[in-house]
Length: 126
Image (cartoon, rainbow, N blue to C red; front, side, top):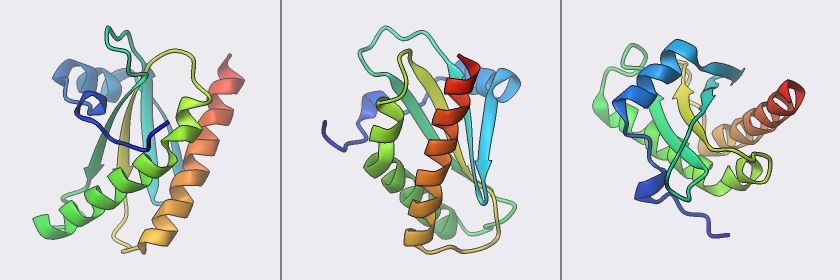
């Protein structure tokens, strides 16, 4: 499968985002947090994915945008971990929650650990 992050994978629905915050479950691996909820989709995509970086920790938009780009890239490269382990569609919101400015390599490593933690959690729920 191609390692892409297409427009159809992007989480844009306000109602889905609101549901994520009100009813979603989460897993964390400092400084990352993944909030997820199973959803019903008409499209063939199994994942709807969004990223967020706290304005509280990074006042400048340039800094927030840099970390959002890094989070999207680490998701794009490691999404196979998620796709291989889920049967039904999920909506995900990916957060960077720290003032610490980690390098790309560190964020990528934490992303892999976070996705593995998610996989073990959903397998435990089944």
